[in-house]
Length: 224
Length: 324
Image 1: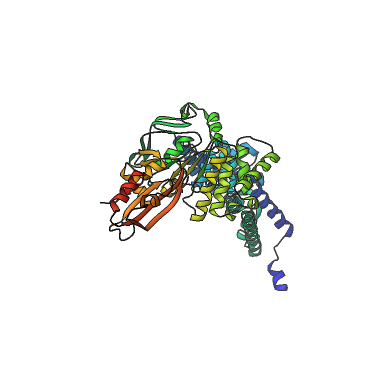
Image 2: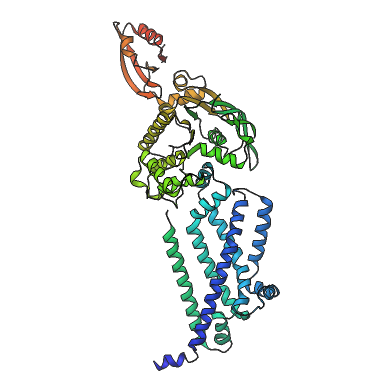
């Protein structure tokens, strides 16, 4: 007992709680915005793609190029590159608020690609049958493709949420706060191994919980 | 004027390595109230042809008209309206896996902007009862058999009361028993509602059972069109001959055998009356076309009056093949 309490000597519960809430806030905020932006972009990618509802090589090419560029920049570098834009948008590049714009720009293109491939998986015969029922293009997307792809879309959001957890940890290194910040400042720079251990465990727990929620929702909405 | 008319229709697809011609100058007319078959081997262009009728495909050249209206003149809203008048079912059913059987059926009404939640539900339940699925309304497609899925698809295709039902290989993914059920249902709907039906298939058996007329398609050309009985009894093309032969394969040893094919009542008794000849059935089938009884059998004709018997059979309209 004394050995354990001696080991965890540096743990400041309220500090850890605060950092956990920051991480949760960053993940929740940036996930919602990533879905809000990534979903329409992914639908556009799927609609204008070569075997899409209305193929358009020019629109697809541009959209695809932008998405690829954003996805090829490592997140830490994207974060730094975006500092001027972040300050212009939310007034600071620090803290939870300052982390949201770069997190969204990092995750939205990733989510958009996942949406594109989820929609591509929708059975061709379902789309054709819906067309034959006289559905407009909008009805085909909203009433047939998105509901059919729902389980895959939930899985995509889960993967994105988990990627965002690791992005927030990196964002922590460059001033965003949260568990990543705690791990670096205390665990790494001050050699407080106990803090490092607790933050890592909390991140693992967070990822596990997110995956469990995602899996449960996928199972809830799967009809196949 | 035919309800559905194709005039000199060509359809080219651009595929990797150049253009491919799916239909090469097809003209045909489909009359209101008939069941019209389009038969051909895979790659003959029959699926492309049926897709032209509700403009899931647009022709490269030529005219496709429904009720006298050239489909090329229709804008998007009119095209949607046209499709509400042309129901279609597919080999792979095309049901939304995320919706129950009932929801799949009401979906067609929702897309057409018809009814209220309550009336849609009532009407869907009526149609599900009509296709024999009252007990399955709340099941998802994954919980239904192939035949049941196709019944849901038929209810969905017909709930907007279209004039035409387009069937693209609708029974090709089904077992024989489910196929029979679907074919009977199509016949019943044609009879009771005066529904015009276009059936695309590679199986002559389907054409034999349900169609009034048939077009034989080969490599993008219609090589023969006519009443089913006429095409089966006296095919003019090698392709139609092959399809008709497939209905009644000869026995292993067909030495001295004669193939008799007829439409209408069995002529054998009358032909053999009071002569010194007798007929031994070897193989084949007595069945029915949509227009009435149909026989296609391999027989042995023995006895001194064999030539008289064959003469009489020919005189009564029986197609006699293989007799020297």
